[in-house]
Amino acid sequence: MKDEEILFVSLDKPAFFGVLVERYEKPFLRKARSIIGQTEEAEDIVQETFTKIYLHAAKFQKMPGIEFKSWAYKILVNTAITKYRRLKKHQTLEFIDPYMYENTVESSENMVLAAEAKMLVSEAISRLPEGPRNLLSMYYLEDKSYKDIAQRENLSMPALKMRLFKAKRLFKKALDNNLYQS
Image 1 (cartoon, helix red, strand yellow):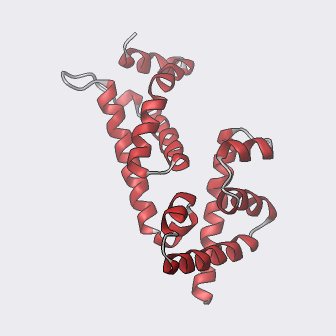
Image 2 (cartoon, one colour):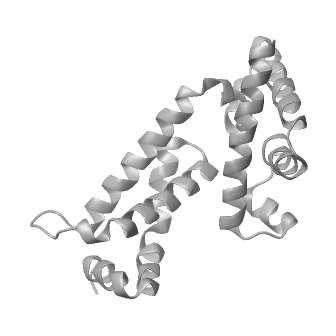
């Protein structure tokens, strides 16, 4: 079956949507990673993209030159760019990300900045309730992967992502409060 046919069948039988996920998950991850540069963020983007594709499946119309693949990639790229802009807008969180942290510790000035950022992060995380504090400590300070955290906390991947999403919001509020009090 063609992608478009599977998409329309999945509207009545959602299990068929898994075929599209299976076909496009790896290429979507590669593309999202090339835009955002971070594996965990790329995974979130791909998940959000598949959700958007499914929710808007009825709007897709097959036209000459417009196939499912190009439509789906457009959704993916737009979602990734939006996420990238959001991340860039919140530059204060830049040093928290392990990738950015590792790549900024090249000069002594950057080491000082990174140490200060890590201290701010630790202080903000310490003020969170135990559940979010533990998740964010594992993710940011211990540099654990989603998979490792999910196994350790005995959570499914979607449940972990949702808890981390909520924990990051609490963290952002705590970090903002910490910055304004300084």
